[in-house]
Picture 1 (cartoon, protein in one colour):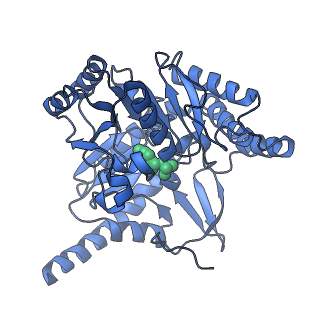
Picture 2 (tube, rainbow, N blue to C red; picture 1 turned 60 degrees about the vertical axis):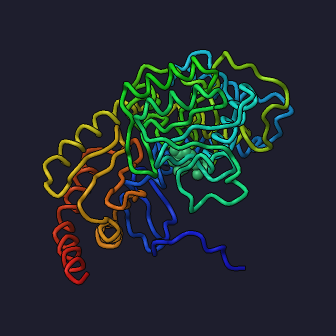
Length: 388
Ligand SMILES: Cc1ncc(COP(=O)(O)O)c(C=O)c1O
C-alpha cells in the first residue's frame, strides 16, 4: 500500500539519535538544529527518558481514563512546580491540535459563545476549530470553514477591543512567538491589553504554547515574558520529547464537569512516564538556564554575519532572516554539511529549533557551515534573479 503523499521529503533516513545528533542508515551523523519541528526538548534517546519509557511499558503501557492513574497526578504536580502555574488544572490529550481543539471547545462551553479571534500568520493545528483558527486557507477544508473565526493583525489592540465588545467571542487564541508563521511576536503592551480585554468581556485568553512552551523561549512558557494570566495554556511538542502527547492547563476559575472533555489515549501510563522524565531532565540539567545562555551566544554570533538581515524569536526558538529564499540554503546545510534546520511560511526565514541541550560547540559548527555555504547560495540566487 503506498503512503498518502502529503509530505515533501528530504532524502535522508534517520534510524537513530543521541543528544543533538541523528544518524542515518549509513551511519552519517547529522546535527539536529530542528528538533523534529521543535519536539526534541531533552535530546534524542536521553538515557533517563529511555529508561522511564522502557520500565513503564514493561509494567503497564496503557489503561483507560476510567481508573486511577497516579502517574497523571505526578505529572500534573511536577508541571505545576516547574512552570510556576500555580493552581491550574491539567487535561491530557495526544497532540497540539487536540490541545487547542479542547481549549477552544472549553471556551465555547463556558462562555456560551462560538466566535474565535485569531491572528494573521498564526498556526494552531489541523483539526476542526484549530485549523479554522489557523491563517492558512490552503489547509482549511469546507467542513472546517464553517467555524466563525476573525483574523486580526498582531498588535491591533483597537481591532481586538472592537471585536470583543460585540459580545459573541468565546476565545482569543495566540502564539506568543509565532512558530510556523515565522517567529513574529506581538508587543508587551498588546498582550497586556488583550489579557485585560478578555477578562472584561467574558472571553477566554488561550496561550498556544504547543511550540513555545517547555522552556524553549528561555522561560517555561513564552507568555511568562509578559504580565498576563491566560485562562487556558495549550502544550504538546516538547512535552513528550517525541512521545505523542498534549494537554491544556486550565485556570482554576473554570470548573470541570464529568464528560465535558475526554479521550481514549490521552494521559496514558506510557505517555505520563515519558512526560515525567522530560520534566525531571529539564529540572536536573537546568535546561532553561542553558536555553538562555545558548540563545545569547547564538544571537551574538548571528549579529556578526552581514547576510543575516534580521534575527527573530526568543530562547532557542529563533529565526534568521535573509534577503533571499532559504530553501536552497537548507538543502545545502542538510546534504553537504549534515545539519538540519527549519523553514517557515516566510520563505526568507531559516528556523533554529534545537534540542534544549545544545552546546556552544554545536552552535559553532552551524555558523562555520553557514558561512561556508552562504556565498554560493547567494550567487545562485543572483543568477536566478538575472534569468528572470
Ligand atoms: C503553535 C502550534 N500550535 C499547534 C500545533 C499543532 O500541533 P500538532 O501538529 O501536534 O497537532 C503546532 C504544530 O506545529 C504549533 O506549532
